[in-house]
Image 1 (tube, rainbow, N blue to C red):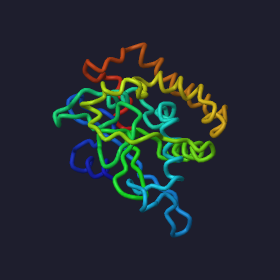
Image 2: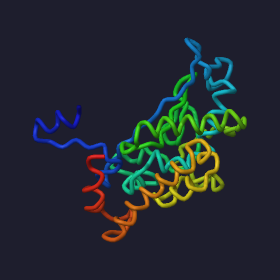
Image 3: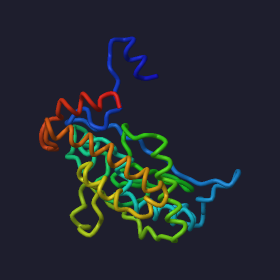
Length: 234
């Protein structure tokens, strides 16, 4: 709808992850909770952040698998200009760099803005909405099945204080890294089926091969013509 209206006015709207290197990119955040009828299973008002044990286990599964699932959440070469990005005109990239969670704080990968839900801020505008939701469910079910503890939330500005947490997992810095992690993630291979994962990885690697025949990926340099030609209308 946005693209159609823009075209009627002689403009071009895009949800490309990072169309301009000096401006913030296009995210596609997911607000996540699990319900049984009218009951929010993630809500626990006695908890300081308002989340139940089930919610924390679900969150733990998302954190455990986040680096692998960035292949789905951030599926284009251009996506990785948004992650681990340098500050923009606004003073921050407003996208994650590390695998961490917090309360109502937009400098982390996951924030808990209100009781009974959490916001996953990793995805960008090029994500397939069906794979996005399936990925969240697969990771969350892994967390529930294995009772994964997400650890304690971090109450800091991750953009300013990331050097204080050297052991915190970093998100993939480019598409090839996330594809490799997804390919070797047994739990996600079991959830989606190895054939589906192999097919997806093959498709994305074919795009990488085409890109590398013409360009090289460097976040410190301007966005390439290939990225705009192949991602502007994602």
